[in-house]
Amino acid sequence: MRILLIEDEARIQSFVRRGLEAEGYGVVTADDGPGGLSLARAGEWDLVVLDLLLPGMNGLRVLQELHRERPHLPVVVLSARGDLRTKLKGFELGATDYVSKPFALDELLARIRVQLRRTVPPGDDEHVLHAGPVLLDLARRQARVGDLVTDLSDREFRLLHHLLLHVGEVISRERLLADVWGYDFDPGSNVVDVCVRRLRQKLGPDAHIETIRHAGYRLAAA
Ligand code: CA
Image (cartoon, rainbow, N blue to C red; front, side, top):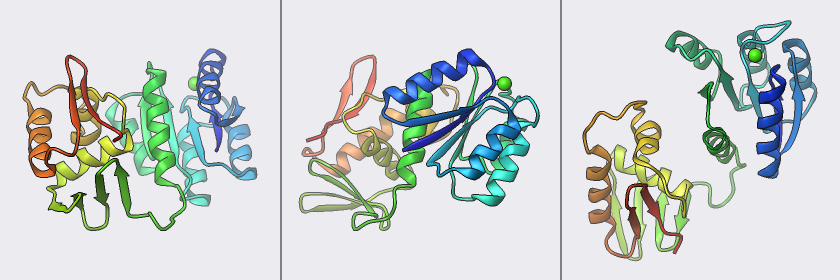
């Protein structure tokens, strides 16, 4: 997997680059807008990480040009501009995800992993995710555990999808609220716990969605 990192701040560039390389990605960096855009055009990339405040050319313009030429290339914006207007502008211009600075490297890496999974070329298993006995049919939005087949509500589907994408990992309530419900705050309710309970009831005892005390939830790999 090849990632182009367009970021002018040397400290952040090297921090992110090292994080990506530790995950096994091939990384090429650019530290201004025009240089980044021409590298993006010239190379074969699986994903671009793009800062917005760049010398030479604003990152939003880079994004716009890039999206016009490579509409399927995932672009994760990484910017100190965390205001809603800029975020929405970024999505409008083709960003596939948006991470505000300051950021946690682990979160950026997790978001990149999600983007890269989405672009895996379709194969036979294109519409099915599975872990241990749990199988999720993405086209039918049905879960299957052994002989038990069950329809899922939209939220249950998205929750199970998220757990399957991160099988074996402990996922906090905050992250589930952000990634499944789209909340960047804790509404102080127990929506996550309620949804997990419903999923457990639907999937039966063979699906191991574990509660990790004070940490979150984990779907066991087997
Ligand atoms: Ca910058």
